[in-house]
Image (cartoon, rainbow, N blue to C red):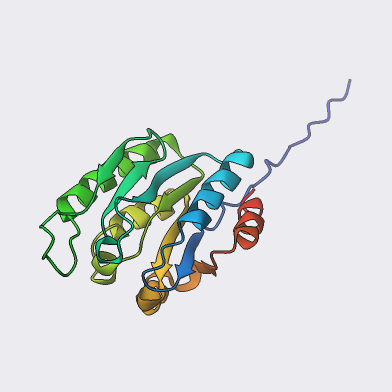
Length: 183
């Protein structure tokens, strides 16, 4: 009796290159509808989500930075602006509130979401802080990251994103096609 052994070579599945996408928008014209379309498209394509959606508190132009961040995993909303009164000017970002949100999001990365949605590559990120560590951690975990980037921060975004960065417009059709390519 003769026995023939065959050795099966296991199929090697290459790791996905981390994707880092920017939804680029004109200064002070945050593309809320584009982000809502992104989240809806991810859910239709059965992609799991982590991160935040940005919601304005007040539509007045002088209060455009007053936003709440909605955690996509829990629905919890957190204010990330300091209310310094009607006469205050300049950036009113509450960096401690942003750090708290970032810590909660980082905790959700353990669930291995497919896509991490972040609201803005802003002044803090341009300066080397803000959500940069969170973005780097997500990429290390092979999680696709999508973040809003105002035109004024595009150069800093390109330096940060390098070869991994992709730029999308706020067009929902373009976003839908991009999301479909994630699978």
